[in-house]
Image (cartoon, rainbow, N blue to C red):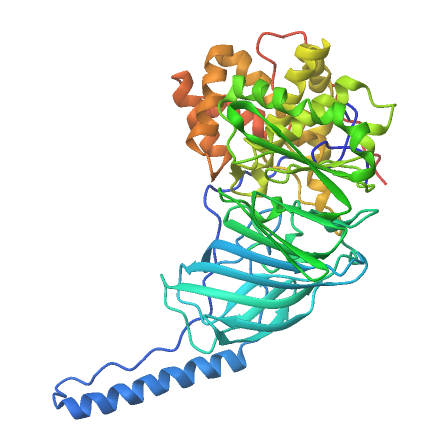
Length: 534
């Protein structure tokens, strides 16, 4: 994985086609398979006995129609129409909660036994339910406690209950399956194997390599996570611990979130670890997970977190979740990741002397700021990724300026010089180019990091620091625990500033060329290198 974008890959502070049209505000959603229809009662038929007979015939015809449809129409992968990941997510239902159970046998090269339970509302009548799931074996599926048929289609698990589900009904899907920690040949992510166990890195589209789900950030849900492991291992997951059960030579840890979460932000750590606890602002529980043998060397870094949380709260408002902490993974990932309430970091970031202290601390703030921007306020579509990474880069840069004198203006001027090259290579910030085949992570390019932070800088130049700070606080408050789009941000910026910023922000977000920077007419973008004609 190239060392480029930050929250998914670690870059140097500033790095080096026409823009695609912006997504529509609403995702395209496909309904489930059409249902059989009952015949209507004949005109003039009044005897109740005859009505019952005709109703029974109609219901039988409907049932036969549904069965024939299920038997004849092959299962197919669906999606919610995301421009960058068209087959990610699934239409027809809204997940309320996940209950995940994993059993780890002590060998991170062997599949884990797992049970995933999904509670959801149907948003249309369904005779089939598509779940995103690949890279695991499915033993059985139940819908509302009744056995259901299932098959695979692409990277979907297609479940056929024994009866159709009406629109607006509550359903519970239980899948007994394995979860394979060994990466597929052409896919990275999902489980990350560490030197002493496992962690998760599901961004952007690989949570479904770990557990069945509706794997798109537009469908956030509550999570309960249970992990059973042998003595000597410790398991930690998103949220707060609710139970620890010891039985024989194993222990089961249970964690539960208190706020909804996107599937890409799920985290489970299993390792020979120590959990360090401290208090953050307002008594916030802060817990860090570290390899036990590295506890002492990592403590000087970990103790910085409470002050960093307070620094962020001074700028954008109260921390949005029930806990926070850092998971130090003994693994070579090349990236850090803002998994909700428990950010994933490579241990080597903190032990490699080549990284300057200010740089490491600013990366800590980058992932912390994602708890507001990306986790609490999640992107409605993956084209809205700039709202996550641009903001995290912005606060990372502000922190480096405040603590190490690395001026924001200097960083943004350098970014401006590279911006046209980034737009040519990866698309404008709010319309990134689709990922390369087999490299889904390639949407995390410089255009959505420093390129997007440059948009925020231009906006602050245009509306002034006071209005900009008001906007930032309003953004995370109004959309807390939800999802939001680029259009939502433009509307709020216009409302806060008291004038229509649609045209101004459209050029900064979607144009092929970088607009002139307000207040800095001397800043120049370096044109992209010409591509030789063959």
